[in-house]
Length: 367
Ligand SMILES: *Cc1c(COP(=O)(O)O)cnc(C)c1O
Image 1 (cartoon, rainbow, N blue to C red):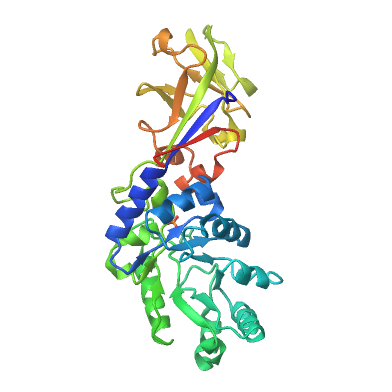
Image 2 (image 1 turned 45 degrees about the horizontal axis):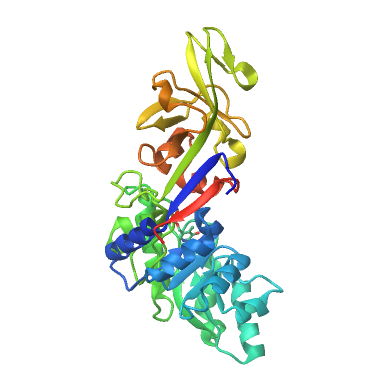
């Protein structure tokens, strides 16, 4: 085995447990799974198989190539899985949706027409989801396109619309006024269309309660252990552990500096451990002089700048026997989760996960 400098451990059983927790909390019929961006950086194939084994049958991705990868991964054992592509109908790739049995989320009138044209051409009643914008102003039919559709429903009559959906912009804050506003906007829009199942809740929406649930939930970050709502307790368990290997340890004196830009200067004698992991591995450079690692539950602060391949820690407080070259410092795990490090770095757990690099020695447990 190659001796990589950093070790990323992904607990598939924890992902399955989080899926079951969200499915239990969700009062609607189906709990789907969002596996876009390589399953939030954790590996689309492994995570997709684990979620299908846990019973997930509605999968969501953000690009056609992700959908194809997932279909190829799941098709032998889970032919009943439905895969939806949030991005709409990619012009010119229509045949791929049919070949791999991928259902687009129709985001616009142009998407609807493109999909209906393909249905007419192939003489098939094609399936899709219909996305209505309820106030996020990003994707989905805006109000004027919804009016146009309601005036002439023949545009979707030749299609099989599995469900209508919308997406919450502020659900990570449970008391944000826009949550209820989007909910009423979505309900008003639904009432103007034929009676169809609905999908509204991301992970946060599941936590917000039954009013937000409808038929099908679309959780992402919660599956991977992130706290969906910042002001509510997180009912989900951690999924990832990240450890870096110590390459070298040295004693430095007061006034000596550490790393690029001499951005840290010791105020007294300290012991510095250098670890083989850096911003090229997704450890954000913003955490220079700010992040912490843990050794046996004891915090060790990062000193100096985060380099491309290296981090430097003040390990003065830890017994020397525990900081020899080859030993590990924990960066994500029991002592510090993805939300803790996200808060330190001024970002969200989604970005911490999707930034994780490709250089780690990755291992999957709980399979
Ligand atoms: C990413 C995404 C989700 C999942 O959101 P989480 O906050 O990760 O649960 C659900 N729906 C849509 C449309 C998305 O883009």
